[in-house]
Amino acid sequence: MVNKLNKKIGYLTIDDSPSENFEEVVNYLVEMHIPAIFFCEGRKLGNRIDFVIDAIRKGFIIGNHSYNHPNFSEISLNEAKDQIIKTYAIIDNIYKQAEVSRLIKVFRFPFLNNGISNEYQECDWNNEHVRGLQKILKVFGYKLPKFKQINYKWFKKAGFSKCLNVDCTYDSFDWCLKEDEECFGYHDLHTILDRMDEDVPEGGRGLNNPESNEIIMMHNWIPIEDFKAIINKFLTKGIEFRIPEFN
Ligand SMILES: [Zn+2]
Image (cartoon, rainbow, N blue to C red):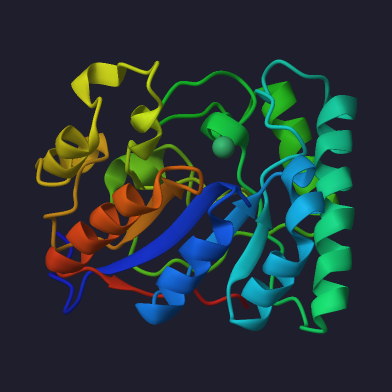
């Protein structure tokens, strides 16, 4: 039995960055004093380097989210290495331009696909392809930040507190805002906000659970007003956003 936390902390991660509204999202988060990790796709970085440099200087962390967002279970290890290294080099160069020393290198798999399937909440770490991917991340120095008090059994059981990529405990389902996605009935902002009140802690919906902090996943490309509404709901639920420790 885990004790109640004094304060429930949310570690905000924003995938598929930098999208068109990257600057707007950064400005909003600065205004709200909310830190975040932006997981960036290499192919998107070229057009928005100045904005990303600015975000780094404002204290945001830039992570690697592959070059063009493939399913890592569907590509070879050589292709995976290429996806990782291309974006690694671009981000490294951006940090140099920003003249900010890099605290940590973080990586998130597109679609949270660790290398075998899109099975939510689990992974077979003995799978050869999965192991190969972890080895590549290790070679490039990717690490899991210290996310404190992530106490969900399913998360630990799935091995997400030991792997080198960053998974999440709360998928906001904001990606359902894509018009063509029906996704389990969470099809608009209203249903996504209602989902935040559901009590299924071991099913990835534990925002009301006072015993674990959360690694929260959102997406950069959702409309800014929807982004703000979702963030606002996290805040009204008493979640305090922090950046993890990196050593
Ligand atoms: Zn993504």
